[in-house]
Figure 1 (spheres, helix red, strand yellow):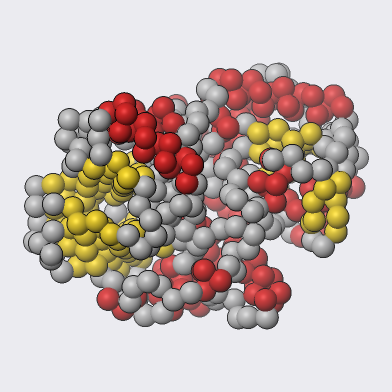
Figure 2: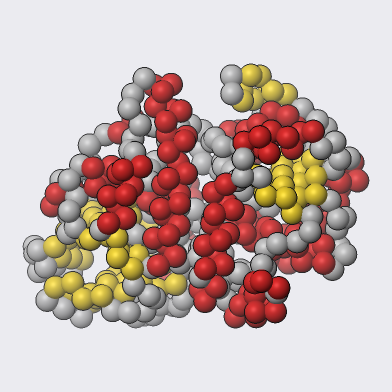
Length: 456
């Protein structure tokens, strides 16, 4: 068994979040991602449960990218005895530290509600960073006896990586999350050919997105309609990638005179910090974005006169005192917590206002309920009527649609022996499984939790 590669599915099965996969080969135990399961609360009992493996026995943890559902349980892993090395690209390490520290506020509030200690502390995050190493894309990382891992650009968020395993002449790829290419800021997902096995995401395995051009036009229309109505446009945005992309688009529209010059509030300390990290790693952006950066004063490709960044809580509270049409971009992206909740409580009852959803909304989250059209919601203990318009723009998703996922598999059609479809709701994963079988005649399955496969 030790001479073969064993892939264990300990998370991200039957659900989009909670990525946690264990690879066993050459006597090594290697984790791919260690994320929280996201739903109504991060402090879900599942996230508090013991790991389905022994943390002290894990040799390496490779991190595909820095979203919480891929990194959120790393401090718990280290706290529970992990002594190995954590490996990612440089941007992913910086982003993960920012995300984990920022999440502490929500964790502490939820833990207090549950009358339990928080899942982890700042000291635990410090311990994580002490054992975290970084490598660039496409550098072969040698582990043991010809077993190597190479990180490939997935185009999902800055620094996001697919993990390619070379083992006894065979090539296996774990995709993490695959970006919705082309992106205004990021490089296209790297083409990987000659795969023997593929473990891939399926968030949108059963549907496609509008094109980026169509989505940009729709964003322009939503802004104009809301401003002309005298309302407020609320954008619950993921602090990594989504916020930077939307800021970039709004700035370009204003510069070109395509939308009114209204005040834009970036009301997210994490997004402000993440934007600085984007500026630190400009060489990870696509050539077009790098060119704009080189021409822009002080390199501020996300900055413009109408932008107001509100770091302090008092500044955030004061937004409601500005009684003119405005745009508010705030976290969290699924309305699970953060400052967006205050703005939703203030403006969802206003029929002139609009809530714009630009990313995946997980089951049981407030964002999902609003997307499904509920007319009353509970926010911070209060019943809030939903009179505002709710608009979803899937073209701004950071994930590939169904056709693009199929095309990604097609690049290795001649060599692939099996595809494992994970990180999706069951209907999405199973739909993609069937498409791969029917269109490409490749064996494909959606593994269950704790299922394992020996790759020969």
